[in-house]
Length: 238
Image 1 (tube, rainbow, N blue to C red):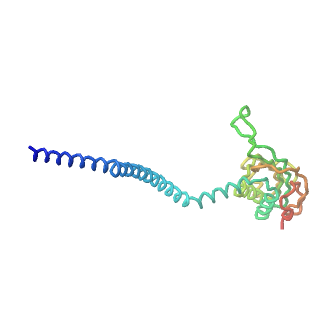
Image 2: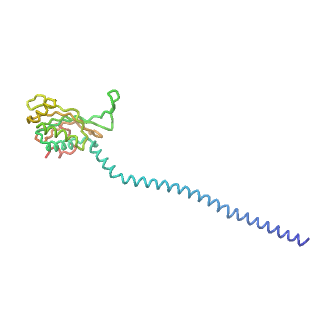
Image 3: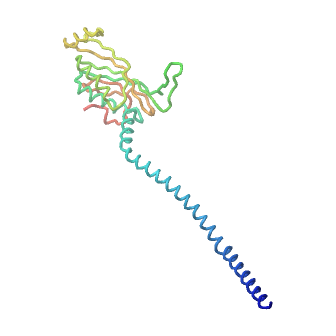
């Protein structure tokens, strides 16, 4: 009995020691390590999600980078069509250029003061747009039928956005030019000199201070009433 009791004591002491070692191992080593592994796993999962998001953003940026030249070209085109300021001097130089290419005999320009452009589909719903300004321009050109027609066609191909509101033609003797196709063909074939009065509208993103009114010289020496140019050296066509 004593040996058995001693064995039981030894077994009990061994069991208690083993349980104590297991408990110490669990609380001092296993549990902290397990918690750390769980924390690191969560951080790894979050990092993988962030990596997936960043990869998506990188792909989007690469796609945007490929489209950037096209977008920049479109932005430049729009800026040329509707510049930051009216840039009347540059507009006059452009008109001078196409007038020389068309071979018209004279040109005079009378721009009005820039005003806020109106937007809307009807009179009752129109409103002023503070980010867009318009300048009404009166334009007088003269020449043969085909020269005047070529000049009007070239207006549509300017980089600047130009709206032709009206065109009024008169012959060299001061009578109104007929508008029928037969009469127009006769005027074209007869070489009649025509005077064309055009009303144009150009646009800008802002309106500078100052009133138009300083004189400028057109392509054939005619004096044109224009706004003070942003580039004084560009007021006279070469």
